[in-house]
Image 1 (tube, one colour):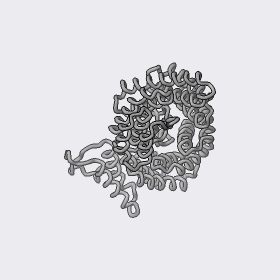
Image 2 (cartoon, helix red, strand yellow; image 1 turned 30 degrees about the horizontal axis):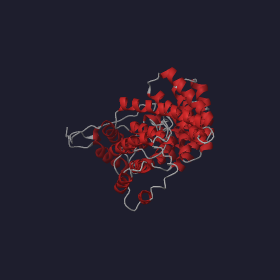
Image 3 (cartoon, one colour; image 1 turned 180 degrees about the vertical axis):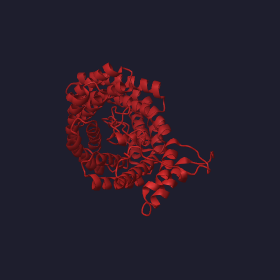
Image 4 (tube, one colour; image 1 turned 90 degrees about the vertical axis):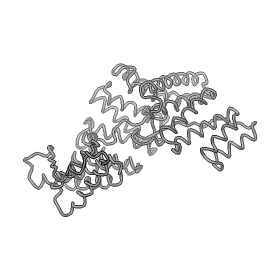
Length: 438
């Protein structure tokens, strides 16, 4: 073996070689090269020049032998295209992955119609890549079509229907269509409960999504009820120390914080009680993350941010300051010093320092992170020259992020994220078993 050989570039070369001959040769004859590319890309093997992928063969065992030869060849070609798209996605080349998944979907529709399960799988793959590329509105449109077709073809309680509906809830929330997200989340939860039972992990995920959707439309009491039910069921079925139970507790804490803000003026005692309970839940979440995942894990970063924000909401700025400092330092280590989440964390830390009258330290921090001419820096410098004019209220900020495979990009996260910044959707990026198999 040649240790200097990098597998993913070799896989990419093999895929390009196969793709360049699609118009002149049957793709079935090139399955060996695609198979070699897949093995190299997925397993990360370092193979030398003596391993000639052109001599390797690959036969897809999922295509029955009795299938007519033409139909069998078409199916093999489509699966080859799908495999190339998957390999590009795993290599991070989402542009090529989207192009190949779009070709597969168009061919599936032409061959099998829009409601065929194979077409639905292709829609799930393309939806996932569109979402990963940030084309959220296009992803929502395709996800809703997939949900409607899956309902017609498979029924409301089929596992694939439940998966695509769960993914649609997440996408609708991300684009701000919260009423539609709530409606879809209610349907998904009721179907999951009917098919799996109330305590099944899939039902608990759907219940959590419903709770988050209710928070987004300001139905906070119902959201609290949903999330308390999730915590109780998860504790009974999975145990109090299970990661999913900890995530459920973090989501409940987020709902309590939202309620506390609404009640702050009219019912200050009840608001303080809810913040106190949320603080205890977030503290337990942070301790569990540090113990299980370590200090530098993204989930730990989320937990630190949630607890710091709760202290700020309670007006305990002296307690919040070291946590915000810790968050900024961790974010620089985990995400990098130039990441927007890191810069936002540093700005939040500087604002609290300013509110504590530590202006020199706060201004120095913002100058280093945001620059001399940034509006936040200028505002803090003006505040430092007029210390009698204090901020009446610190702005609310909660970290959020995409799925943890990508860098957290201020979308709902939690530990894992699903916590107070809102939970990261645990529905897989695609909505079918084949899509999840990748």
